[in-house]
Amino acid sequence: MSGTTVPSAGGGAGGGGAGVARGTGSGGAGMARGTNGGGGAGADSGAGTEGGAGGVRVRRMGRTALLLEVDSDDEVAALYRELTMRQEDGRLGPVAEIVPAARTVLLDGVAQVEPLVRQLEGWRVPEAGSAAAVGPLVEVPTVYDGADLAEVAALWGVSAAEAVRLHAGCEFRVAFCGFAPGFAYLTGLPERLAVPRRATPRTRVPTGSVALAGTYTGVYPSASPGGWQLLGRTGLTLWDPAAEPPALLRPGTRVRFVPEEPPTTDARHTPAERHTPDELRTSEEHHTPGERG
Image (cartoon, rainbow, N blue to C red):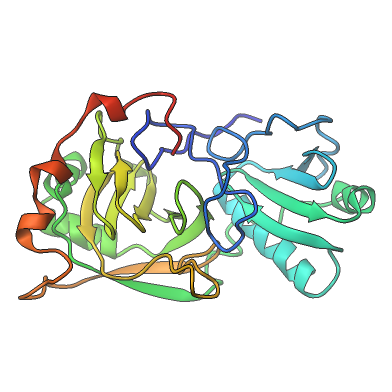
């Protein structure tokens, strides 16, 4: 199976390092498991492919985990939904967590590995796209005043206003989470609107920034270095450790960005804060291949 490149949301070199958080089914970002956008087997992958009937490839990950590999994010979404449904009604067996990534679904904390492998060997990938309209809908009020809006519009060959209309007109879905607690990778942007990461990341992207890279959209839950193209910002809280679950955007959630005018007085983002040189300057020291995220 060929891998997929997931644009890193952080300040490191683009591609491949996003991974997906292991042990964070609620959308947090623990220790990244695997490489190549979360789709690769980790260092403890152990045995090779166990079975490939119907397109689901089963790979052992240590003694209590299985990695299921498929060929597209649509297949991941359908497989993830099927697995969670089977978990809820007891057909899956004891599994602690089901964690989707770009081309894989990790079953972690599997109490009985061999019976589950036998169960999965005969599986076919559920119909791609069958999960697209399933899941709760979260509307994200967004002020489209990002520093890269004009550049993205130019890449799309449209005006800034049309770029806002195109982005806000999509319904997105949380494909998987990673990079930072509460950071969700959203699919739904047409391939023709894919944009590259910035050549040199910013040293600081403000909390709530709505950004693009490749065909993914993301919202930065906290301030951090980042290399995605900034379209705008939202005041929603994406990650609250005191909440249950702590992540607002979890795998399978549908998301729509709702354009809104900037408030007359914005205590969270004053114009000076939004456009300070510190936030917009770039630095090669944050553009190192060894930085994760």
